[in-house]
Image (cartoon, rainbow, N blue to C red; front, side):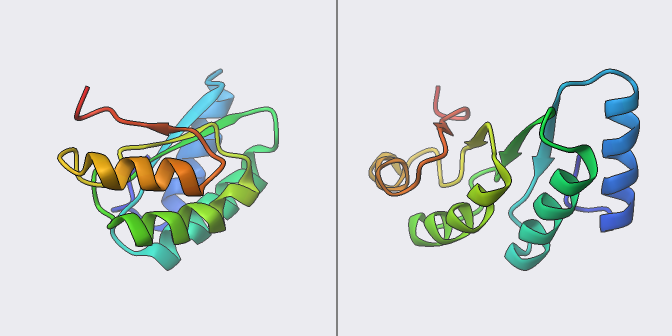
Length: 110
């Protein structure tokens, strides 16, 4: 689900995916942190606790921003966060991993 659409569009897409049998949702984030946090909150409330939520930031955040944002959305029981910082910033990825409890996936640098 992309961060480019409206929140209502994202919620509708989440409902459709769950109705179609999906058990894991990927939410693209990284454009606007307030909107990202709200999207994760509303989608979690919409789909309930039985659906896994993964967040993909596509390298959009600095390590400090990643920690701040992930800590805010951890309350919504994320399965994992994919590539929160630049794929070249291995120290930044390690810092984020140390400072949050949600698993971090390093996709682009694998």
